[in-house]
Image (cartoon, rainbow, N blue to C red; front, top):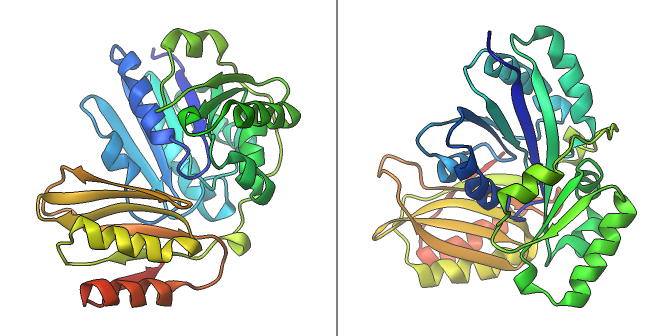
Length: 311
């Protein structure tokens, strides 16, 4: 008889470094059969492609938050199917906008229908040192991700000074005084620190994820092969309206992996097959339509009308 599936939840707002952290930590589970459930707010896969590696089963639930009623049925069905798989560990990387306050309620609802039980080991919240203090004032999911997690990874500490790190610690302690806090950069975490301090939170609340407060977001695609410099100009021109942007665009060497949060963006080369779609998921700061801003700046720089589909 197979044992229970060990379950670890990874939270964190957009661009905090959840995927990088998960890439780093998965190497410590090579002796186990591992599944990863990736929840993308957009309809296209980005993080699943980044995380893909031999021996790890990647499952995706896209186009919203798994904690919202809009995706709850699909999440429950996926979890029931995963309980039938011969995996030892399941990591869930929730959407950056995901509010996991109701996660324990969801697990309790699922339990009667699973073939094997999920043994919840704990929730890890990855915090962006640059943006956390600002976003914590604006976005309820940021606060509730911290409240729901008893292990907080304060990431990107190389980008801020010690005074800001101390203020982040104070804010986290106000939200969740029981939390263990570890400061890091590039999503690095010693495995012994994780195993010694990870514990299951008992926080139960109501998620703030609803259809009515969903921000405007689009699937943006182009058939063009683009150069880096005008792509950087495009991102600079639209960033005032953007909360998060990520995906892949064709380059002369293959693909660009484009990643933007707030005012910061990174463009790196990526190895994908030419059959892969050249698409970005772009999420706005509120529910106001900003598709015209995207179209005008792309056409100005690339002389092409892109495909912009509301998500």
